Picture (cartoon, protein in one colour):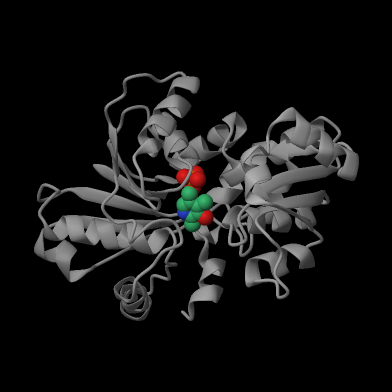
Length: 300
Ligand SMILES: *Cc1c(COP(=O)(O)O)cnc(C)c1O
């Protein structure tokens, strides 16, 4: 597929010699999905690729997607569309602000048209009535769901596992909508244990992942679990302790992280190591899902 030419296919796996890992005899490494492309970073590329392909195949020139004002998905769709020649409409939850934040500024610079939707209408964003209204405004478009998770996204996310150049006992990654973890579980075919670190508060995610796995043909699989202990208050919530941790990881270990997803996951993995959650001698791969552009809003 011609999209591939712009994307780095050789993603590095970096050693992470943290003292806690050494002390507990854990082999800890990080797969840098953030190296796919500077703007279409990480898991978002894998989730988008087959959707872009499908849109092109079906003859669409215009993509429409949804997200909050700080959405990495909005950022990635806008970047990809510019690179691959699609027009885009970003339906943004909430009211417009006078100043665009860095995510929305980038999106508009890429040519994305922003359409703000009040929260009540946004909840009904996929209902026929709301869609008809969007069509009357923008014409025909290919829809990519909020967060980018659909069956084609899972197909792409499965391919993340082809970058696992050795096998590990544990695969750890942050979770938002669950599309990425579901794709990885499907791609691993029962090898190893997958641990998702929820960036959101609430227990609804487990059911969502189960449903995605079922749609992907996998039921009652046991080699995964969700950890909900490290959301730091919920989506896009953070604490000074987490920001300090992120600064330390970058300066001491050359591992850049951001506070919405990857910072929480790495914090969680190290904390579990500290609690001797993993058997001595275990091999752990942390999956850096990208999103580093999100640091712009956090003084990092
Ligand atoms: C969107 C995103 C996630 C969450 O991915 P899901 O497939 O929605 O679970 C994780 N990490 C980063 C950096 C993201 O941008």
